[in-house]
Length: 607
Image 1 (spheres, rainbow, N blue to C red):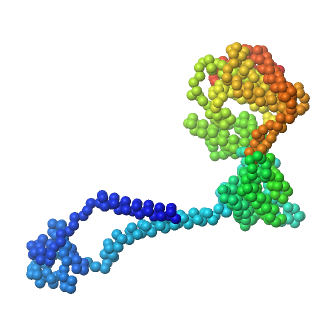
Image 2 (image 1 turned 90 degrees about the vertical axis):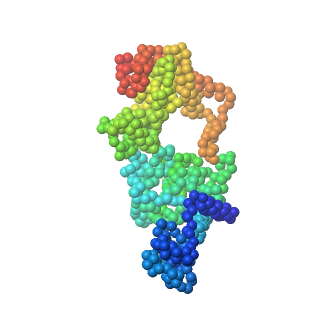
Image 3 (image 1 turned 120 degrees about the vertical axis):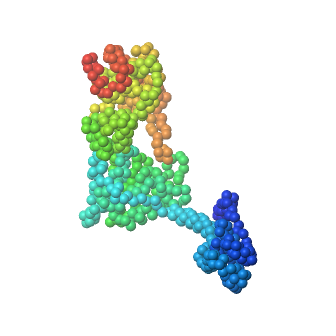
């Protein structure tokens, strides 16, 4: 109420201030002259009056010179009769234009009431607005328990044709589509369709898109909400919103209820060191109860998405709830090509574009990354004032998404440029000299992001397993820049620091995680995954100090072996190293075809 009275006081002050401004700047009208009847008679006889208006007892007079005057007649007699009795000549009286004004007319009442009504109307409008805002706030307070479900419209319809790749995932979900279209065939056989389907996969792999495609194929209402919207600062709101969401979906059955990022409320209960969250756990309990409450013939399918299935509560994953799990993995080479073609629709493309080559340079890209790549390519083409997107635009966009934008404005000295060229040439030459290394796709000394230069090497085809020999080749390739600097300049720079960091990490993984060292087929250390934080925060050391020293020795042995391999490859092909470095200093960037064209005369045989 104190806020209400403050608003009232503010409104009154504002109105008074406006009235003061009007009175300050308004030009006061000149007050009319007041005449007696005898003075009026004299002026009429003198021919100075052009018009007389009578409004009740009030007389308004207009002179021939344009000035105004007022007078007042006798209450119970006409003005003409009074003037004749006061010896006004008939000729002078006939020259005056008389006008009788209606005293009870609309303009009379408006002139009388408008100055009083306007401030009152303004105050009433202000009070109405304030009361309406207060009522809306009260209604919002009572609507806390309602879910913020959103319904996908027909114009947003997506089908499986709009989803490239994910063949296995779509096959799993076609059964759900069939159930929503024709449930009788399942129910007659006593079959029960899964009530909950959990879509699992890394970010950007299309979990939400697949869920919308299921609804589009089924042609049923698609309700979607984020799990974080269930939980509020008020206790019990999450459970209430959960009930409302499931009730809404049941009323619209057959329908699909999609809960995005379900790990926001579905994390394992009672885990972690930070205590519990009663509101989140109550919301999770309500979701479990609602999914148990589905009848066998209830035509509501609950789809949920998460990229952290490992931290979900076991009760959420048991049969009868989310008992079907669909994995959406990162796309392979063929899928990446198909995804690029889908996102290329509506864009102006050069006829010579080969999406296969772009897909080969983007391993590990998700569908969202590829969509971003196509958009970046269009932006690059627009900045270059091109009429169509070219192959080079796509390659540059892939590099930008992977490494960051080019920093061509970064000024470096000729000495630093030469050192960077030999550093990257060392990486690239070692990769060519080792048979287990991946082929080089691109070498550049143009700075991108935090890298002063980069050598891009990618496998010829998607790989799911990696051998020890391939790991050792990667280590040697990482040490190639360091070895090249030391061989050519007799010194090393800070440019190799990131290479050494990555090589040390990979060598330690070979020893501790993959069992690929002389210590034998054994792993060391156990990761502790803290559920309440959702990530690995510690390592349980299950080995002695003596073994720790042996692990360090094995890591150093692998790194020194990699360095010796890189140095051997560079010493054996010094002329090729200088040729690559000099070409890089001239052109700054070498694509795969140009790079291997430089090495062709040297006939390097991989070892």
